Image (cartoon, rainbow, N blue to C red):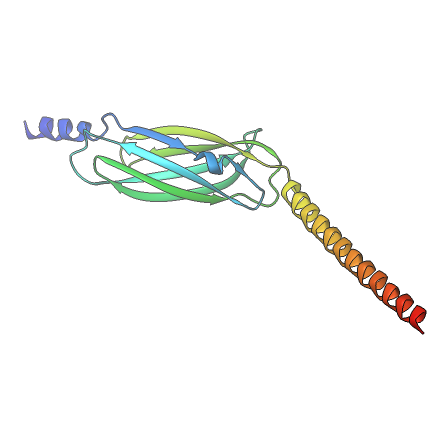
Length: 166
């Protein structure tokens, strides 16, 4: 009798765990070398007590090759929501990437969810930054040259006016 009760109690821990993973819209595009932020939400209303869950985040490129990995341990009772960040390597190519999240306990629970994000073209943001800097320098030099010409023109007029008086 006690054996059957222990089996039934053990089965209740593997009941309906609901997991969602998403990437906030403001972090849906990342540059190589940047960080991707992942929001994980776990709901487990049937769980009766706090239990450690092993959560693995695997970032994969379009061909399925793993480019980054994170392994965490979270204690969850009935629900939890948290953010994790993973650094994207500098060598990452532009394209769509997928974060595969696997949630397991140390028994029979195993759930997988995923979300996708984009890695921007390398150097695109640097080009825009350099363009703004160069345009700023050109405008600054143009203002200096214009001011210099105005001062020189004004000095020549004064010199010509004083020469006429003599």
